[in-house]
Amino acid sequence: MLNSSDATIIVSVIGTSTASSEIYALALEVGRLLVRRGCIVACGGRGGVMEAVCRGAFEEEGISIGFLPGGIEEANSYVTIPIPTGLGEARNLLVVSAGKAVISIGSAFGTLSEIGFALKSGKPLVGLATWKAIDEEGNIFPAMMASCPEEAVEMALSSISGGNDLVKG
Image (cartoon, rainbow, N blue to C red):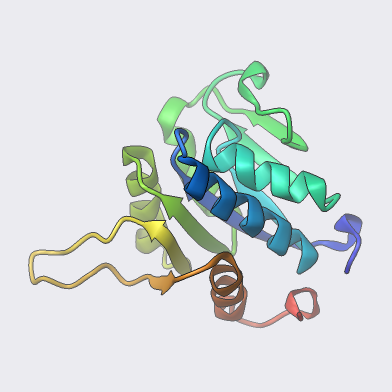
């Protein structure tokens, strides 16, 4: 495993702030796996999926960045680098923009907005137990759909163009 100080790849993880125990467990494992692969985790810094992914990173002695809608007091206790934005839900664009890839876990309207930002920006997007939006022609949005945390992390890291030694398993 690489030290968190060596990590240079940021992966954004988006998801509901009111996660069920099943969704929380998925996000916890995604956080752990990303750090084991040498990544930094970026998220919205609050509860639910955001707390779980930060906790997973924390447990692996990794780094998590939390882009908070308001002040620093909103950060969950596992965020390594809290960034108070004062932007409310508009901070969702920052969350997505920070990562080279995006993993979406769970379903909430804020998550749906972040999925839209990821698709609009052309970021690799991996879904894990998340939204499946359909356009006017009946096409499901272009995301890779994973069945487990290991597959979600592998898909996200494999999709990052240019490659990097940090993402080797």
